[in-house]
Length: 130
Image 1 (cartoon, one colour):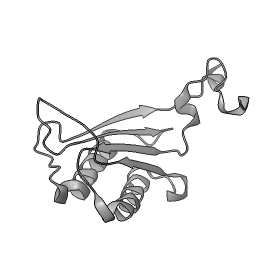
Image 2 (cartoon, rainbow, N blue to C red; image 1 turned 180 degrees about the vertical axis):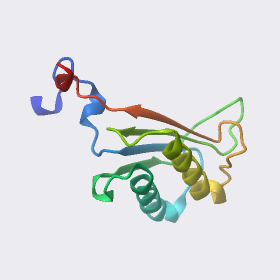
Image 3 (cartoon, rainbow, N blue to C red; image 1 turned 45 degrees about the vertical axis):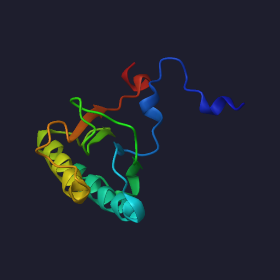
Image 4 (cartoon, rainbow, N blue to C red; image 1 turned 135 degrees about the horizontal axis):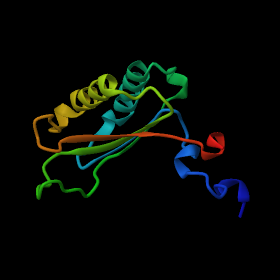
């Protein structure tokens, strides 16, 4: 087993995500053959919304997941966006709205309570703090 894959003590695993920013999205709907196009559209959305080059953006989608929100398994999506900077209230809304627009044809609607939830997390390299 290679030790290069093991984070050093005091180093948060988010510091080792594949891209900056990274969007990780899970949904209970079947995206079918459209998944590749959706990945590309979300990559552009994240790049434009955060002001980062698309060459830095990583997007991961898991569809057909077993999920429930508010006691209902109606179409929903949960997402996490990780980024060093580029996160604020303005682009938070742009990304959430954009993801909902992309998934709306699959029944994931903005007005469904919890239909799309994005958790924005600032990645920090603890070694840079000290």
